[in-house]
Length: 219
Ligand code: HEM
Image (tube, rainbow, N blue to C red; front, side, top):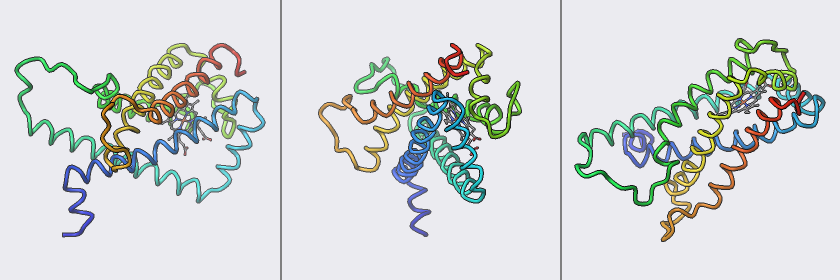
């Protein structure tokens, strides 16, 4: 059998695929939040950045292809691992299991992931194609972001989705490190400084943009 097939068929192989694709997506998210924070500087820099990206044509589509493949592999591996886990223990523990070293983030990783997927579909229709944006202007992310959160329900949806993204990152970044053997087993499994810093940065950065637009600071 092909080595890639052997890796994909094993549970640890799927965890490695989830870790590697997850880290690709984290790199995108960190770049994405930094780029979007430019919205606070007015239209100049963020709109030039968008023009630069869209002007590259092939490179933009190359990056999109990497993201699509990463999301697809991440989701398929997650669903298959969840099914295997379910098949291995179809009946839950008789006595209620008190969480040992788990966190709220780890216990909500699957529902959070599903919410992020729904968010992503909405988000692309909102800010990339403009289909669900009330006044979308092509290549004008400053205007699109400033006006895109005027509806409080849309802003609320983003705030909830960004909390899910932060929690997902907090558990996901730590767990990728473990799957790839980058961080050794620790006597203090709840101490995850890098995961916490990344999660806080992405969550607070995106949430600040939504709140800034809603409050009229980004206008
Ligand atoms: C407040 C939060 C966010 C804001 C303001 C925001 C803003 C934007 C904007 C303005 C675009 C269009 C860019 C362009 O066409 O030039 C965009 C595209 C996109 N965003 Fe976000 N984003 C946010 C959160 C997220 C999150 C959390 C994710 C992933 C989970 C994400 C993933 C994407 C993707 C995949 C695209 C499509 C990129 C492309 O067209 O190639 N965004 N975002």
